[in-house]
Image (cartoon, rainbow over all chains, first blue to last red):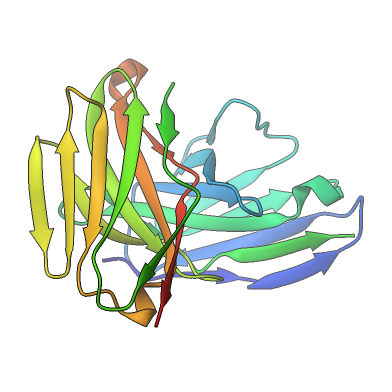
Length: 114
Length: 113
């Protein structure tokens, strides 16, 4: 299984500002995934980040709001731009692996927007 | 798209058995996963079913019926540490040979003494 770390683990931000979340994996992976989990809700996929190409965004998520970088096979960043209180959520980085191509998740970044 | 349904909350007694159900509607089914998520932590993988039947792994078992769009997670000999949310997730083939994983909202299980 992959070991995934995220920074920061939590943050409290002001409306209108931006926050960049970092994700580091201990092995090289082709695809990295960014999820959001709002309070009491399910995990929702934001985008899939492939190294060397633009991220693929799911319906309801756009690059201007959630720009993603993927400079190499072990690292990715997700920026939450021009934040509003509705962006308060846990953001999780994930990779696929294991016997069943299951998802492994990072510890998450708990974001509160005031 | 997918529609995944599981109970919001369940309560069970330490030492007992509990069954958490999940129903889904999808085309291009490519597997069903169960994850455990303790409060404030990331989800961790529990089980995977792609063929009909029961998969057993220690105290946890998972069952799948593809024709009924139904799965359950069975937890035996419940322990207090099993108190967590249990997420059902369905993977389906989407266009251009890619796959999409969709999570249910999770079932919050409380184990009481």
